[in-house]
Length: 142
Ligand code: DQA
Figure (cartoon, rainbow, N blue to C red):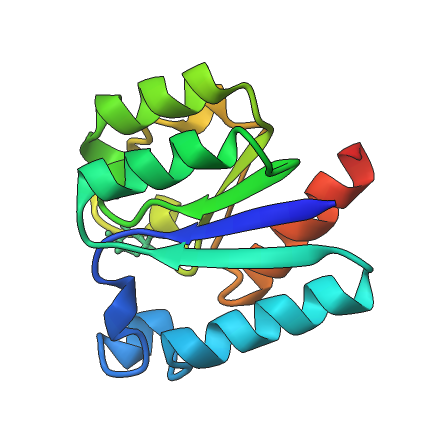
């Protein structure tokens, strides 16, 4: 199984960005942890980050050719982007929405997800574990 893990806008700043909310791991460290988890479960993980909505769509569309599942932290685009929602709806690849922070317990705009209804699950508030749990979920669904 090969899984694509996608990180949206501002997640390249992990480690320095609001560490009290998002933790102190850098994106490289987070990706290493995710890849190690995948390796332990016998699954290949590819990672991608962009601050640009269109580039995220391009990566998701390409992944429909090879990925058996997708884990996406959409960042703030998950609260605003119908293009992202339509893309996930259109690629026919099981996708899990993740967030490091507990979006339900923060500002009201973060409770809105444009992509939740086209994802198989939404996992938030568990820090890096949100990603690992999403991978396990995709592996269980096979
Ligand atoms: C986030 C939560 C979003 O509301 C925010 O815009 C982010 C990060 C998270 O991982 O907790 O950029 O997706």
